[in-house]
Image 1 (cartoon, rainbow, N blue to C red):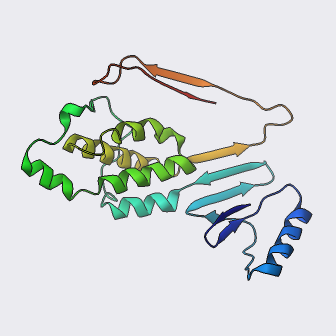
Image 2 (cartoon, rainbow, N blue to C red):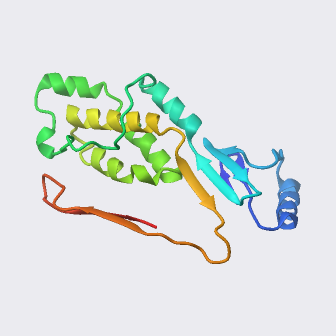
Image 3 (cartoon, one colour):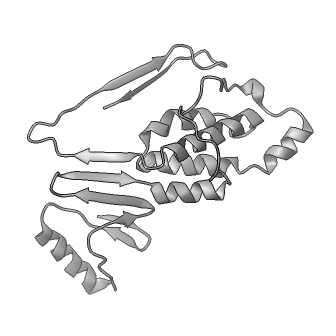
Length: 196
């Protein structure tokens, strides 16, 4: 059972058990059964029962985020965070003009919006989020450019999500790993990423 404020999602292999839980909850609370789940908290749920595939995406959420930050018609990019973004603490704000400019920028909201999508159905955004959120306390304009770049990538890949498929009796697990030696300009630490 997934519960968030007044939205609830029940899941089980047995429809009998789901019906029983619904009856019990209905005795205590006023409830409205909306049938099979199609969306919860902006997360679109698409099922193909015949092929045993479940697909989760944030298409509508991404559209709202892009509209909110005036990037709906922005130029699309094909890479998540381009190599020319060498983010460093040296790029922090120094002039009063830059500080005034960045105070008007909704940087934390952009990072939070991207992070919500990453947690729900876009793990591919993890590295970019770690990069653009490193110096939230004293941002430079270069960080804002990088965050907008990530949003432009999301706009290009707006329909990307998680696909969960039944592979039969024996699950097929694949692992991928990548690392970037001494990527951090400030600390010269390496960054490693993996996915299964």
